[in-house]
Amino acid sequence: MAAELRVARTDMAYDETPSQSWGRMREALRKDIGRDAFVNWIEPLEFLGPEGGIGRFVAPTSFVGTWVERNYADAVRSLLAENGMPVNRLEFSVNPVALDFKNRAAPVPARAADVAAPDSEVDLPNSPLDGRFTFENFVVGKPNELAHAAARRVAEGGAVTFNPLFLYGGVGLGKTHLMHAIAWEFRSSQPDARVLYLSAEQFMYRFVSALRFKDMHGFKEMFRSVDLLMVDDVQFIAGKDSTQDEFFHTFNALIDQQKQIVISADRAPGEIDGLEERIKSRLQWGLVVDLHPTDYELRLGILQAKAEAQSLQNPGVVIGPGVIEFLAHRISSNVRVLEGALTRLFAFASLVGREITLDMTQECLADILRASERKVTIDEIIRKVADHYTLRISDLLSARRARSVARPRQVAMYLAKMLTSRSLPEIGRKFGGRDHTTVIHAVRKVEELKLTDSQVAEDVELLRRMLEA
Ligand code: ADP
Ligand code: MG
Image (cartoon, rainbow, N blue to C red):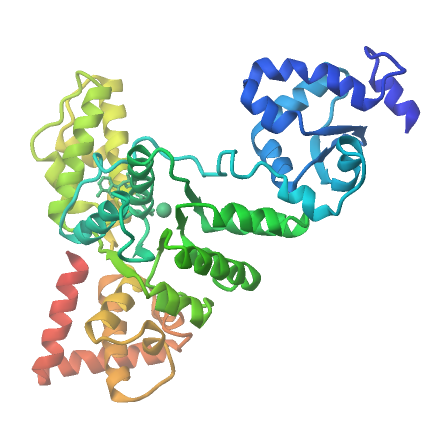
């Protein structure tokens, strides 16, 4: 071990301890990352040395270690490499007692060191916010107006009227956009407020590392000190029991303090499988709003806004008549796909130096157009049918045979057969693992009922129109 170290550390005084050489070389970082960051994150570290390709450090709290790892790992590694200590990665342990020996006369219990963490002064571990996701850039239409209005209200700050705000909807409908917009707005109107936006996945990541580094105290302090907490894609923690548990406590603590919480998920609270009942019901206490799939008008509005932005970036590219309308008609309800299509069109047009015509659009977007031809998914069908008959999705997929459930289930299977290109076995699987013969039976039954039962005929037509809109 010692020999290995010596060979590696060629340009270093041999009698220096790792801690002394670190003290000397870390100064280079002060310039690179700025004084404040240096004082907050680098100075508190103690270097134990490179060992088997790992740069080992002691951090005052796991939070500091995690932060350095996430933000400065590359800088620290290149610094070590420049000083003849190349390592593949960094590792941070938390050793409050050792630190206390250094900083104070007598060792104190580990807790005290945790409490001393500079939590309230440091930045919150926000996920990065996208600069384009502002209210200004959010196009409002019927399918999202309620969600937009609620988001605006929260962003204004002021008295907390509904808590939490729960936004849900399918992928690419603007949940994350609205949450970032709230964060931007809230921060600019109340610069002193502590706003924390993160994905549920990051919430879990922080929770797990707090457990691992025995820093639950720091974790709780941090989450409970915010004025506005936003957790995106909360369906992610379904089934992850201890994370849910902690989420629940954090949630309650903040609600009790009248701090605003905003949550998003891909479906309604009641429909997130694997989410504890008490959490589901608590989530429903506030305002639950869904972002509906886009309609033609909204798509048109979004495309117009995005085309304008694209034109600014690609001066000289002209978008021909009918193209925007064509796209609004033909591309599915997911805004992300719309954006991607437009970006590609503009890139292509500026490359070949031609106007964007309908022909070019069809050629350039053939794959996207093909993919969105089958734009109705079985999940959407299930959701719409459940909605229409005011049933729970779980009932629709259950084994219950009561007519009030069985009939809508057959209608849903019928629509799945008619509106998607899924095979019978695939449809059967989607409906709670049923056999393909059950699907055949359902299709026949509904075809028959459409002729004899006007209510069924009407329901099917209405649903078909809604799904194809
Ligand atoms: P989600 O989080 O619901 O999956 P996102 O918020 O990430 O969806 O939105 C996907 C993309 O579509 C983003 O680039 C976003 O800016 C854009 N987008 C969604 N809805 C709108 C809207 N109403 N106006 C403008 N852009 C939108
Ligand atoms: Mg999102």
